[in-house]
Image (tube, rainbow, N blue to C red; front, side):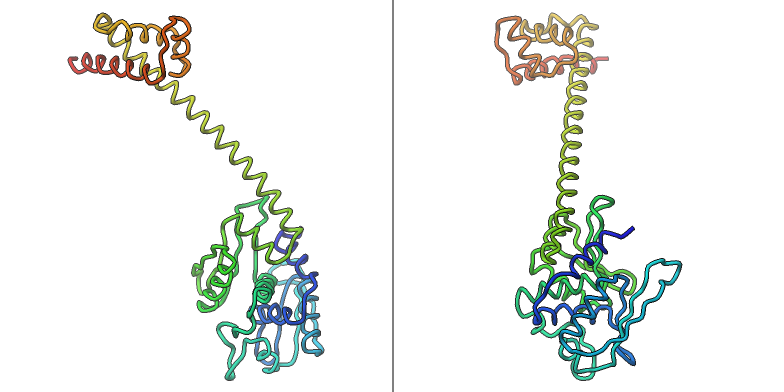
Length: 308
């Protein structure tokens, strides 16, 4: 079954793009998955991405490419698409990734000169090395695994120009640039113009947020119920200690009324108990007033337990 990452890449690969923005996208793709030895070799597992790369190269340089399709290694059932073209430093120079007879650590500034070019560059990065978790199946996570520290910092800063709160962590001999926040991942999908993916992602995110909020409310309600029961149990134990020591007459008349009603209504909250007493006695009493009287009861019971 096709992964969410592959679905997003397939959608993005079909977007129309201007020629100037295509340079930025192609620069990111070739830098990240290009092999520059005897020739320029680009490898991908997504047929739509392979077709995208082919069209971008034809659009900008009008040269022929050799395309090879083969089965993946290690029992991988996916096909691997390999695009090859003769090594040409002029092409790499035009893409802003080559200068002074070497591949640069980060692209030249003119490749990402404006917002549209930056968005196109990020689209190319995602098509080549991006991965995003399916929000329905696992935690929110977007990542890019890159080969050198300078490029990881460059990519992290570029993402953060769009306020995506990305971070970098070293993983073995590589660097992972990642985004964890669901809202920010949704924003990144918008940057890619992957709107089908955005609708799917946001629907799942809203559902999960609503479910989590419901669970939190249920947990909070249960915690409040547990707190009410525990408070009432403690108050009953304190009253019983006083009675066991024949100390009930040491309480004031108001405190006796509160104690008697607590023994009668053992599981109600202080708010409910205050309403019951107010209705049945005709004497209004607040939760605060109840709390004050129960505090007196508690102190008296502690006196008896200390004497023991």
